[in-house]
Image 1 (tube, helix red, strand yellow):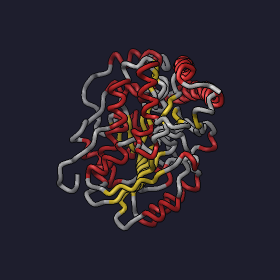
Image 2 (cartoon, rainbow, N blue to C red; image 1 turned 45 degrees about the vertical axis):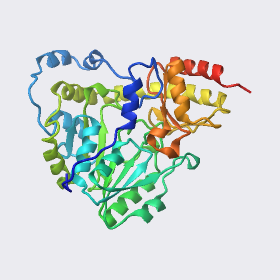
Image 3 (cartoon, helix red, strand yellow; image 1 turned 60 degrees about the vertical axis):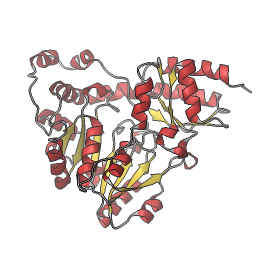
Image 4 (cartoon, rainbow, N blue to C red; image 1 turned 135 degrees about the vertical axis):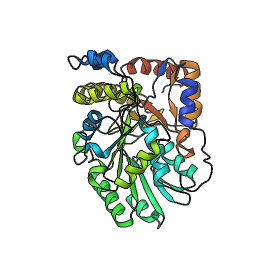
Length: 381
């Protein structure tokens, strides 16, 4: 970390909320990942895979990730070679390392907001000045490109974007993506592009090109956890043509995890060989659940505001009336065992919003439990 001061980082509100409730609440209606697969289901995809896993030596792996895994990851992009992929232990490690090697005290960062907390707070803990590029429900979560142009400074070192977006499911228009890339070239900042929900667009025509394919300075983030439904493998990565950032991240990783889990890499490589099978199943679950949610929110339009997302297994609806989402979510999990994520964890501007997740098979059961709670709590017209 440049700057030489001790890192002061706040508690991760979302993760602390999960720590309180995730393994005690029986109905998880907030999860940001897709339905997971068993080890057996993954091994069944290829004849002989179980035997290969049994023979796997549990030694150290290559610090940048095994060749077969990096080859499969590179195939997710149009202009990325395996040597331009750096594998990490989940997306969080990649975020942490990027921020620490790319930024220093006094640098300026612009962050697409609301966001996964570490995308802003790691930079802030280093001593950066963070500008929130805020989006609003009343504007359909649309990014304002003029805001970005107006807030770029001489010391702007990075712009952090997230599309498809967590928690709203928003996708920016492709011309916006190209404009961000053009501004990066004009002003010299790095784009850190969180793309962990890429390939879960409901309409393939909405899929954006990966920023690392468009911009040689950009760093794209991917992970096995979200789109592919394999969070237990703890495998994430960055893809970039930016050799300087790549090399500095690889060196920093020697002080974090050094290398990744051998079984995690093996199963990730195997899964990506058959990625269309994983994607088709997950897209099918999401599509079916989204139909149920559309009907649910139409039925309860007197209680909720609902904007259907464009991608991914999450959305960010809001409450009508006076009750805050924080109070609503706390009462819901306490009285009905249904876990939603209050928008206040993303900041006070989202006190009426809550995150709902619909990438898992048990959504119908969770939704029935939520409906029972609403019937008991709210007077229906």
